[in-house]
Image (tube, rainbow, N blue to C red; front, side, top):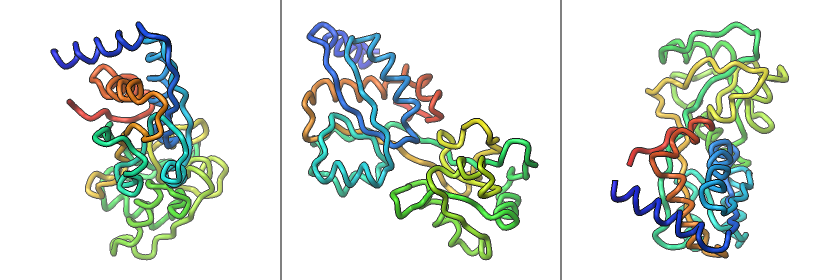
Length: 243
């Protein structure tokens, strides 16, 4: 309770000063929840958080090469190579987004309720996934999955953009991506990837070294990771890490 009171006090203090605007760069997979939180942040504080979406690899490269921002959101695995572009001691774990499978709306729903059934479905249909070379962390996980012996012979197809889009267009019959990017009109989410495969997208946030307003940026990170933020994150299919 004391911690929540201190965070609330920080937010109120920020709103009492002149309204600030911060620039937040995030992968599209986390953008839905952040958009909802930016809206509630504006109501609560009078401050504005502008959300810029991009691919994880491109964000990592841009921020690492000096692109200005106040807050950067990425999978934790991307941060070690851009340490110099971050304010020290600001890296904060936010939560996880499940990986899920999709088919085109109206197509049969294969049974992926167990690992053997999931493997059989992937072998029978192949799988579309986002391009790891273009910086997709979720795509890299699917590519790694396909190297496991039990998936031998399964066909993988790299899609342009999120795999749900390719499934919707009929380019691939079955796709795997983050639940947040899979949930679009025209496709059906048939279930999460079996937990035995340990596939999920972890998300963290940090204050950028070039932040124009690092104090407000740090308060924003506290705002989006407080327990009350869980409902807004759920709108973007992210499970907030418990405090």
